[in-house]
Length: 115
Image (cartoon, rainbow, N blue to C red; front, side, top):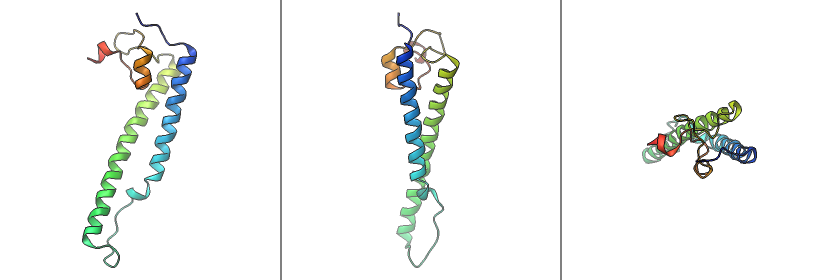
């Protein structure tokens, strides 16, 4: 039987989540320029350069979508912490092993229920 998290363990995981959320927000701000519309400027951007710029833009949007998804997962985990439900499986209600939460603190289910 897995033991519930201690207050110190839960706080350490909460801090990790908060730090990662701040990282994601910083990365989002850094990539803002790459997500701007690609302008057609025949003088400075040739056809291949424009395609490259459009590819960079598409990659920036895809990266932003991944960051937004991760941020939603983090916010959901922070919500579970606030509600006192963090560290317990959403499926069976049993404690989730600390090792599993250290791998990914946004996990909401134990291994058995995840299968």
